[in-house]
Image (tube, rainbow, N blue to C red; front, side, top):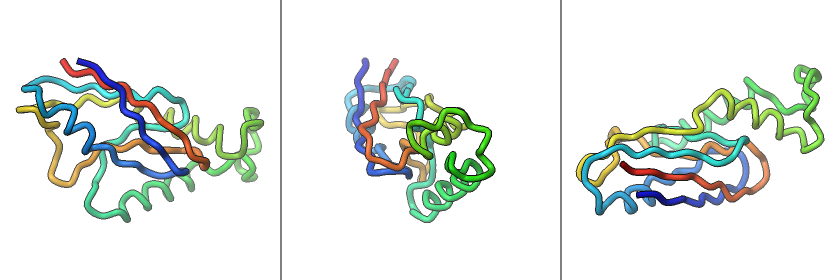
Length: 136
């Protein structure tokens, strides 16, 4: 069973899409869900979905860790013609997962109480992100 989720982002940050995944899995039983984001400037994460400050702090941490390419500490970068957020977005995506494997039991992803599934958008402008899903 396969599908593709489309996640509209409005700039850098975390975008939860747990609910559509749950809805898609509802008719199945037990197995393994694999998610794969089809882009090189965003990531997939399982992260806390109870306190939005967690997502804000994660975003702030990665922005400090990998600043924009026009920051003096990033002067060594060569891929800069797509904007100061582009190459840092590729670096962040290389540091974080672009695929996830999630067990499924009785038609529901086996997530912790406060866990959600997120696209972590690393670009500053809006994008439509595609996440391929495979259930077996």
